[in-house]
Image (cartoon, rainbow, N blue to C red; front, side, top):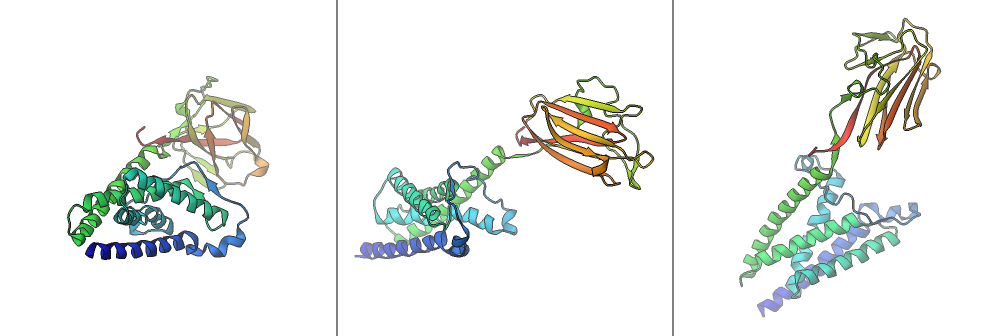
Length: 312
């Protein structure tokens, strides 16, 4: 009799919790108010950030996205506990049914403009359900119902922290970050120009004192100079350069930056202010870089930061 009562309570809890989750998935966060503003379906089939969850430091000042990221896992843990309590099922059968159900819900979200179909969410939701099922298997080992509930709750917390830690490690392994700055004069200039990266103490541009840290490029006594660099096997780069025309020179000249024959930057004196300026250019898979200077233009602290994995 007691088992039937527990089963009945579990059934109503499952129904109630399911309705709450469906409300959040379809109507919370002002979703209904945005329906009229949406004119196209959103389907994200390729997972790209399912392992990105906020770190412990992020939770000290959590944003809505941080809470959603954790919630997409934690909110579905109860399903992995409640359904096995109602129906005897294997892990494979349970996860198959759960994933199919989530796929249907995500599809309805997209088709009703009340959300999007996002594979990242499917994976996170399924992780939560798997954690719950694992906690159920660990916790329900005795005949004492409430002791089992307590053990399952503790197991859920431990497994959640474990998965959170693993996802954090995976995030670090597969996330790129900016490497330290490398001055461009450390590359080999394929033209063999001996003036490449000549450094001087200071410049005065627009009345401002400028102190270069790495290099200075100019064309003293010439009308034009092109510096050519082979980028080798570099991947994604952020190329930065500072430029301007020194105060003691006529305000005329130009700069061009060309990568693999494509002009990425062209600046002439007519387009400049009488003050130092800076540009950052994104390069990906580039093989050859050319910097062409004309007139009195001066470049300094030209270099790059490469996007690399932390283990590099």
